[in-house]
Length: 285
Image 1 (cartoon, rainbow, N blue to C red):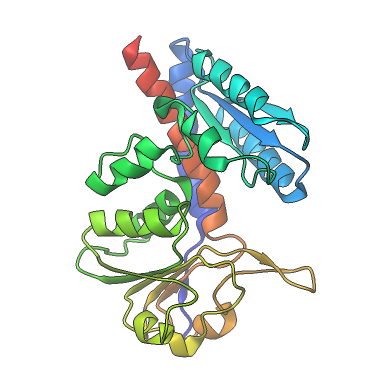
Image 2 (image 1 turned 120 degrees about the vertical axis):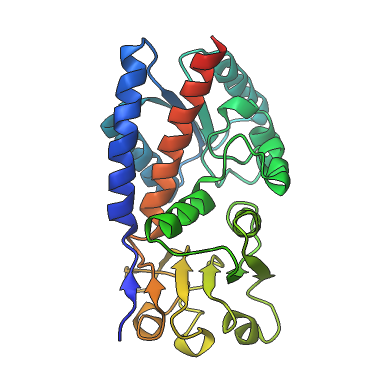
């Protein structure tokens, strides 16, 4: 029997409709949520991501603006722009689109974003606060995964959860958020010895390695929930996740597709964080 597909696109659409109402209510009170995106260089994939985010903002009632810099830009001019955005009352959320050119220090730029406007949840203060469960904003992708589990009525508390991937963007915060929800968490990487021994124990398996189709059916526990965060462009031009979807769906209980799974949720949670940032700003006023 095939696994139940967790439709991230459908869940994200429902959430965005709810947040559109929140945005409209704020606008009626004279406060329109605002998001600024800083992008450096001409990475094609990044440009597509930014366009998708801007479109989502428009559809949700969020004001948005893009600050583009050429590949040759220096850190100081980008830092100066971020400082200006930190002081701009019309902007409630700021994100720096990654990856950056090699001569930039990602950490330095991200650390320059005001904590109360760090809607990507990557500022060191927010990442550090995850350990105590007190982050101002949760990183969008793992936050989206938690929402998918909640909306699919998948219990996390007491379950064995395995996260394959250790990035600061997904793997590490994902593990902390599952731990906060009461799961017993194991963190692995693509280089973990005897990886299958760990993944086969997982009631909830989250994979974010950037290695296409590395998780196969023999590595998955029967009826497990499998969340595929990976998105890889294959030689034939099609997109594939880090999970071998066709084989694993015949063994898992729940599974996310690629595309249409975690991806739409990441943007949805960015919108959520931006609206939340505007709400917090309103309270301060």
